[in-house]
Length: 157
Image (cartoon, rainbow, N blue to C red; front, side):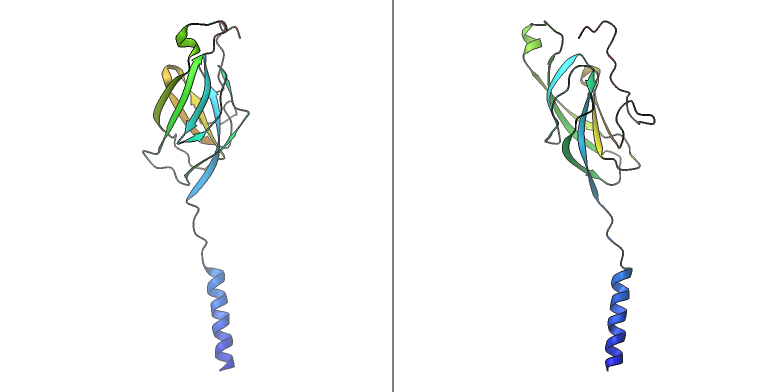
C-alpha cells in the first residue's frame, strides 16, 4: 500500500510539473502622444484612459499608464480616441482658436506581431489619428508608424 501511495504522489508531481501555463491573453501599454499638427492638444483619452497633453509638432518622451490590449492583433481591432484642441499658434486670439474643441474617433490599431509596451497615439492633419503599439518611439530605426513630428519651416514657435 505504501508503494502504491508513493507511486501516486510521484505521478501527481509529474503531472503538475508538465502542465502548460495558460497563454497571456492581454498586455498593457503606456500611452504616448505625437502631435503632427499646429493645434495644441489639451488632453486626450484612449478608451477612457487619460493620456495627458501634447504641444504642436512635438510628443513622445512622457508616458501615462495604461491601456489593455489583446496579446494577438486581429482585424477590426480599434480604440476610441477623444481629444481637445485649440490653436497652438502664438498670438492667435480668435474665439475658435482659444476655446478647446472636442474631437472623437474610433481608430483602428495598426497591426502588430509582437506586443509592445507603448501605445503611440499619432495626431495627424485633418483630425486623423493613428495608433501604433510598439516598444519603440517615433523616429527610432524600424519604428512601424509615422516619423517624429516635423515643424514646417514657416512655424515660429
